[in-house]
Amino acid sequence: MKISVDDLSGPEIIDFLDAHVRELRSITPLESKHTLDLEGLRKPEVTFWTIEDGGTLVGCGAIRRLDVGHAEVKSMRTAPSRKRSGIASKLLAHIIAEARRMGCSRLSLETGTTDFFRPARALYEKFEFEYCAPFADYKEDPNSAFMTQLL
Image 1 (cartoon, rainbow, N blue to C red):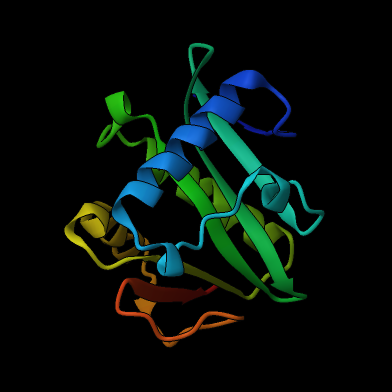
Image 2: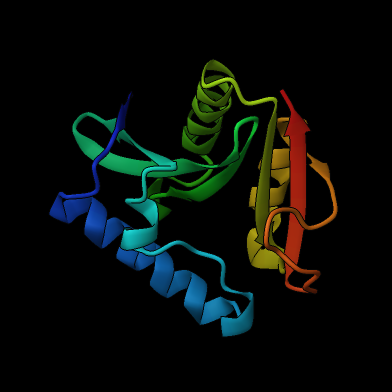
């Protein structure tokens, strides 16, 4: 598998992210949607990676710098046909290592609270993220779980 920084210009990743946004919008109330669109992911404070297996896009993820020492995990997605195959773990390990390399001392995230997001929460727990209060511009929301990790 190959993990690469992606400039979000290729049609395959654009379609992959469109499916991600459509899926999340179908299960998350609009007022609780925190997914970044393409323009949000193309901002200079965001680093976006794709993971390919044999030339096929199988996942993606990003970090957004919040300040000099704090970043947020964004846009984690695994291709539906490849869920529970280790792709998300490989990508999250890479993102954590890159956050450390960038000088971050804290990495946080927001994910959903419904059963759909249970595997995501389990992944973050496996990587020693702990539940926390809302961070950055987030507010308390019954549809959101906030997690953080000191690096």
